[in-house]
Length: 122
Image 1: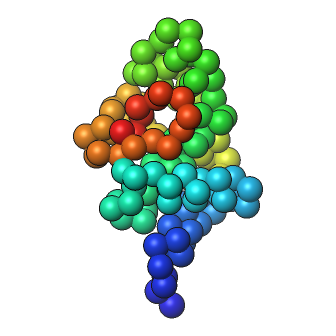
Image 2: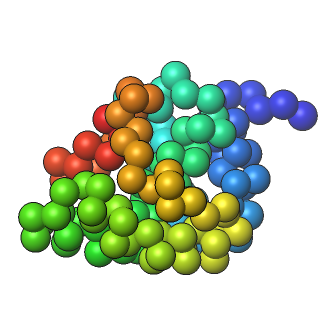
């Protein structure tokens, strides 16, 4: 049965992308994917993946601390890549190749719904 609405479509995409994602984390990531103005027009799979990566980067790595210490986004992303990928793999999701880790998602026009002024997905 096809999804009836955007929420169901993103839930289904998230379940495919990260089949071992705990329910609590899935809810937080779903909220992020649905609340982000920049993800509203993204395909459900894209919204789920970007929200998944952003959530893991901010919650399961030292990314925000590195930014607060003065590192630029690319450097901070480089230093947290192993921890980020460990979280993704633990959830059954594909890791981020190093070549993609430092790319700015800004070209996609995606806003990151996070309280810190981190423009990762803007």
